[in-house]
Image 1 (cartoon, rainbow, N blue to C red):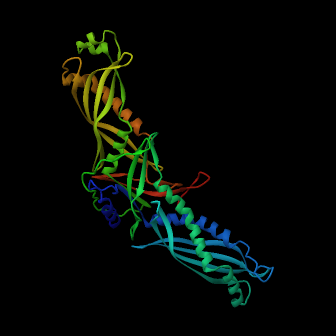
Image 2 (cartoon, one colour):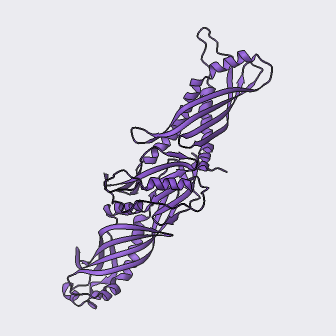
Image 3 (spheres, rainbow, N blue to C red):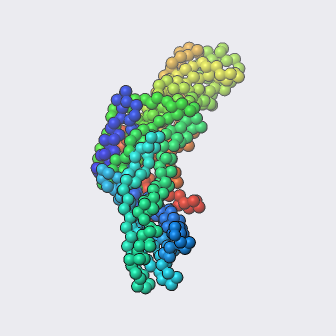
Length: 450
């Protein structure tokens, strides 16, 4: 499919190591997504046009009486957005106007507006929707009585002129631009860790949609962290069938590795795991424990990372690999370590989407390698280490990782919109998330199309 091939090219720009600005995720807004945005924008457009066009006309300079033509109804009959490949968008608005030229007559006219739009990056680095051309036309539909079309048309034209209508088009863009600015807002992952999606350039336009490339940045305690370098360029094969969804988001394997790297920098994997064992029960297996701890004390494991986490995306599954060091010790009352073990953990991740958040959870531990790194109680065979500590590690490590991840990670989105009909598909090296848009109404009820 061409649209995802284009996104593949954008995302394949991932690092060389010396390159700072490179995309690791992106999205394609499809023609059906544009249709939905036009549908939910129609009431706002009608409100803006009604407010200005129905305002009483200003008195003529030479008289104290206003023009006899008064617009008393404004209804947007059509509001559409169409892709213009390699250029931008075409906005088309048809507005039915009810005009009262005299007390007992009503005249209906149609105002048609064509405007060319495109999205560009402003000096602040935000995406901004701007109009590059605007052409309004006015046409009479019907009248309740024969009128002097020359004089009445002239009066209406004085009230509805090109400059005024094109100014209204500019006003219509204020609302979406406020929302576009929210695309690059920082979103919390933990109380001290944030993610931000930075647009790298103005979008590209094709028959398949509007393609946006994004670079993920992370902050920990208010400081941006340097992300690991992607080892290979991102590439995405052609999908087997086109997507009917409003929007398709794509995330590279590098995105997920960067996410867990940021969590590591935030200390998310510095965990404390309470063991059901005590120093007395351990002394039955490790004799030197008795002389080191004459009284019975609870045993805990404290983990830190030995190396940065990595995520591997394979067809149908995502694997998180953690490289931990676990100090095993007793609390007496301060922590006193007597064993240090290395843990290499592979856990399968489950990905889903709720509203605008990607929910990541560790579904199952697929493999754990445990080895002795240091001991204050003499040699401990590997089989004994596994017998004593692996059951607790398997159960508690998974639970604590999920506590870290339970808040989810905000996806790129604009304010007031959520995602529905989501389908998360994991492929080798990338994740696709086709979804539909849903505008949340101010009352709390949702507005949907169709």
